[in-house]
Length: 194
Image (cartoon, rainbow, N blue to C red; front, side, top):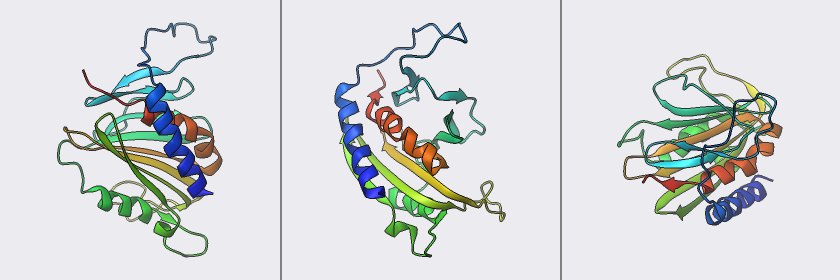
């Protein structure tokens, strides 16, 4: 199922990239009862992305976070940016992310991850889809670990001339699966900074 979802994610990213039309943020958000109908543009520095209207932007919880959103179903998307040097290479980050998951059968998470690499508008983008039990440290450097059964991660590393950006969507499997098309559309909407 992960391979099928990741193939669909990759196809949606590519399709969204061709269909993206640079959505602006000029819609009226003054009425709480109005149903959002269009994605809003979010400038992340080296590029901008279109954010689904059902995602709630939150102030970044730390300096490591460039942006973050809560997503229906108790999921969260965080965009990390550490500057031009990033935090290790692509393989090191993928390995660390896979180490944050355990599989019910005890097999290595790398055997269950679906990883794709493609180019979009001059950016190299690596995406990963992985499900299992989320066992990351409760905070960087802590010995205490989370234990979240039935979680999923959709992630992307976007290589830019200003350094890599790390997108990490985490939450209960059903919530992340429900957000997969929106995540793919967001990644596919990347537009270089002007």
